[in-house]
Image: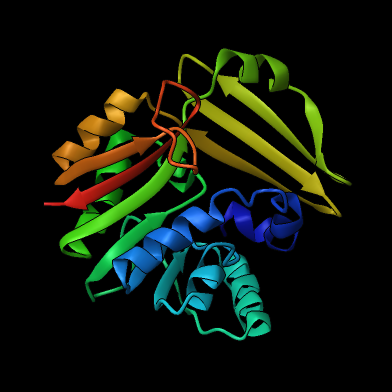
Length: 231
């Protein structure tokens, strides 16, 4: 069972304030013309708006609970999503895509360089020649770690989260609790330079690195948004 199964119904209320990336990913999808592959589709927070923009999208997730919510969200929005259960390191799709996306820091669930390479290679193998890959990750700042480490904080009314950071191992254990549901999520981060190296190893050229979803250039801050091309 995925940890996300435990909080599938809590996920949207927990992340309700996260809207800054939606327009960015929809714009990238429209630019590509589709079809789009989203790995870590979750509850369809990004996929539903992409489908509403008229772009065909296939979404893969390792949580059956999250996929069930995504199906409900798609039905409410009156759009069709092709949703599939599977691991982003070996997604159950055979066709080639114009664009692959991994939004909302989902790649940070890959704990080792071997897992990261496998995931990136899986993306590359499912892109058309010259197809593009867009994702976002973070490298935490000292202030963020100091403000959140080891403390339960109320993210949304009645929904709490606790971040336990290990700066030496570059890992984050994130606990989420609310409305009778609780889950522990494990993430691992890398410096930008190491992402660049892994992308080059797996056949990608980086076309742009942004510091935020307004396409401001990356300037060494916590978030990095990557636009890459398969070669």
